[in-house]
Amino acid sequence: MNPTSAEKRNVLLLASTQALFQTASVMVMMLSGLAGLQLASDKSLATLPIAMMMVAAAAIMIPASMLMQRFGRKAGFLLGTTLGCLAGLTAAYAIWLHSFWLFVFANMLVGGYQGFAQYYRFAAADVASADFKSRAIAWVIAGGVVAALAGPNIARLTQDIGPLPFMVSYFALSALSVIALLVVTRICIPSPVVVAEVHSSARPLSEIMRQPVFITALIGSSVGYAVMVMVMTATPLAMQICGQSLGASATVIQWHVLGMFLPSFFTGNLIRRYGVLAIMGAGIALLAGHVTIALTGIEFLHFLSGLILLGVGWNFLFIGGTTLLTEAYRPSERAKTQAAHDFLMFGSVSLASFSAGGLLNAWGWQSVNLTALPFLGAALIAVVGLGALRWRTRLTSPGNVSA
Image 1 (cartoon, rainbow, N blue to C red):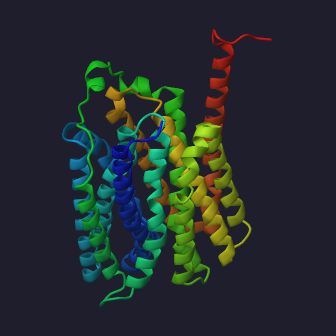
Image 2: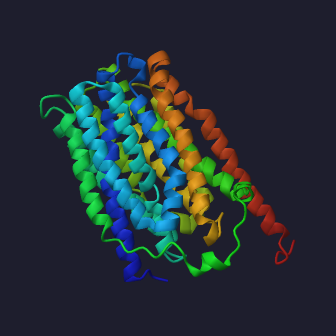
Image 3: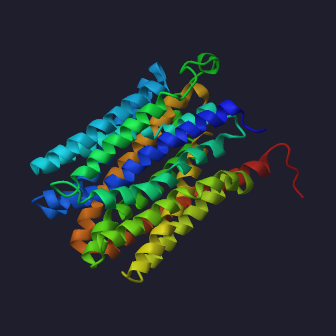
């Protein structure tokens, strides 16, 4: 069944808000480590602003979901974009004062914005029909293609404008958030209370989270996101240590972000054709490919090719995990299940982003990448395990006739 014009309109508007948010996010991921290095007296704390952004995103997940369940998605998205506006202004002021801890707080406001923005993809699933759901999620995440082109270029063009490095870049973050706020006002999302939610019984969250499908979705999303953020956070600093210019790191980040979001135009179709577990498995293989390349050298092409694979691997695992998660809950369980998943996912991402600076500072670029391997192994075990469970279930189902 083809999506209706109303479905397409809402999904495209959500993709636009995603594009604006991701552009701001790419700028923060690219610049906050460098700005933190400039502001922090202890250089091992350079990536703390990004880590605290992830902590704030995790902390806001559950309150954001509960707020949107009561007042609607649009109210939550408007609040999130407002936090983005405040974040850019606060970060610029922190740079003016040369205050590291105020800069950390500003990045936490970005995390608040991120906490609400993570529900753009779930909002797309909410307004889409069953056949359109995986493609709707992928279309929204594909909004990040704009971020791949705009984010690094805005960072590069604005970093040296004004009296202090990076200050104007954070003013640009506020401007992007204002535009996103205006786009949100045009979205039409159904009331948070629907008939299905009123009449269907909701299971306890602990019961939902014990399902193999939830566990696999969580491990896939968390490992993919954590590995990607840990490496992406460390990359500009590692390239600087290796003698690469900021322009070179901007190019690498730009291609990395393209790798993250460009596949979204066909990831949904791949999931429909080959199955969600196969695509998640391919994502794990691509992330392992990045690690292999990163361990073989530190030239520009090593960073470039490795980060592209890192981006595509994240795309497959994140979209696959999000699609798989929609199989774990009933309509009445949607808010708490989505909140629990993203809270736990961003908790792991917070640890990964914080560890990036310490690992890089103490043991170097290779240690950052080697750390990813056991987590990729855990994700592979989860995906293969769920696949085996589903295969056994099909074999033992009443409709199956053994040879």
